[in-house]
Amino acid sequence: MPLVQEQFFDIGANLTHESFTKDLDSVITEASKLGVKRLSVTGSSVKDSLEAFEITQRYPKTCISTAGIHPHNAKEYSTSAFSEIKDLLKNDLVKSIGETGLDFNRNFSSPEDQQKSFEAHLELSIELNKPLFLHERDAHEKFVEITSLYLKDLPKSVVHCFTGTEEALKKYLDMGFYIGITGWLCDERRGKHLEELISQIPLEKLMIETDAPYLLPRDMDIDKSSRNEPKYLNHIARKVSEFRRESEELVFSAIYMNSLDFFDISV
Ligand SMILES: [Zn+2]
Image 1: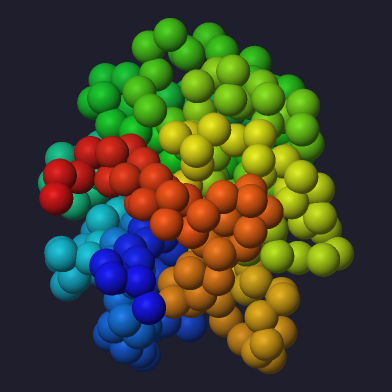
Image 2: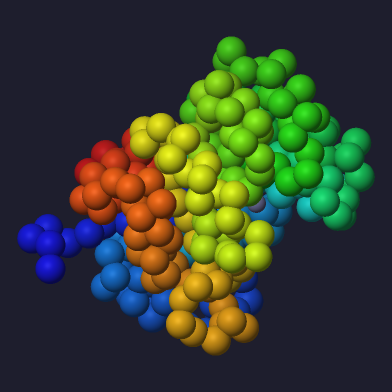
């Protein structure tokens, strides 16, 4: 056993998801017992961002939240809807803007709607100087094109749930973005390439997340249909250290400090 308890920060957990309604208390307690001392609850629509904020008020020592409109929901973007996001961001526990970005994988909202909403989020992050929680799937080129226009003024930003190519990773690192790694890394079907890429991320730009209840790490010895939970974050952290061939002590403490710093949390 290490002398100091390991500490983890789950930078993306969808705790507003209905699968957590009944037992959120125990989900957070169990995660905490396994070292997950901090969680950022992801907001993905106006309603969801409000609910994420409510969770932070119930667990202010553990939880912070994001406020934003996910690209899937970009069709709900309007000036008035966005003013609610802006209001939410006045709260101290709402630490970051997002998720926002582009997702051309399924286009639940049209690319035009996604772009409009995304640009509004980028502008707001500059206005408020709050970090950005970014989502990009199958939209790398357009994502780079848009963010490049704002890059010189952008606050700290993380491309969360990175699953892309080496080329995309290099570009995001060049642009100064942090990289969020999920249990996708533990997926033998589609995450193999991340095993190689993970060492290319400078330790000071790396953070981890579960994206619970989605993306259960597939190599854990539990039923594959289980929901993912923040308590499994330590599994992802161990894989990161293993694939980087760096000590757990070094990797865990760096990632934790990066996350506190990213969300501007003083301990
Ligand atoms: Zn996302």
